[in-house]
Image (cartoon, rainbow, N blue to C red; front, side, top):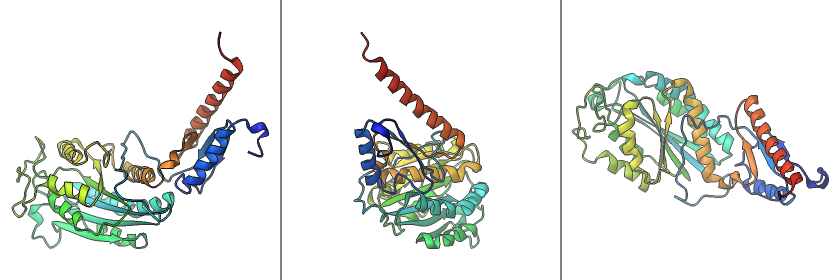
Length: 333
């Protein structure tokens, strides 16, 4: 403000080590001071991966639990992964990128801790398999031990299955038994086939069209309701093909109003996995831990290319020129 003669014009701030979550109160105060002088702020920062609206957005539920002081938040992320025969390239994506996603999430959002866990599942046919178990679980660990989770995923190959649908119930039962304690809790569900009972007219038939394997008694919607409401876990699902559509519609019904459940479309290929997951998680967690980061009067840029930044700056400049022109013209007769 001291450097601007008469307090006119806009302010462009370019920074590489800041996100709006870093200090939302200070950002809001600076914005208010600028607005009082008739100015605007364009804050140019960079998240490691920007959320892609074309892939999908994910809005978590707000006010599920009180938030601690800024910078002390704990974020719990559980990866629930179909390990059956058709999932090879997606298992490889998790092996390659889970560690970077978790590390990037903590660095971008400046939270106190990000904890990660893993639940892998197959089907009833693998119930006695010593090499490709029906379910694999790695309990939550802090960021400093994230490589343990990556190693657990790395030990698994794409094996098993049989009919089209898979045993999602055993995965959700396992997720319910995890030690959830984060201020923000998200399960990332990655599968290319539906649960038993939700395949519609899909390929491969369904050995258990009623939805329950022989050793199961509790329906999947009931278990999902417990995960959503008793454990307070939001669910981010990946759409790898249309085979899961009916199943995902049922998942959405467990989150009335739409918040708390999202679908990321990765049907274009596995190359979008890291960017889509990290972008969606970063944006979602930011909306909970620092809602004032979207302060009125602040334009933010969180893209990754110079051409995108140029477009943003050009749009801001046009707005400024249009406002100045309107002021010079004065009221029309």
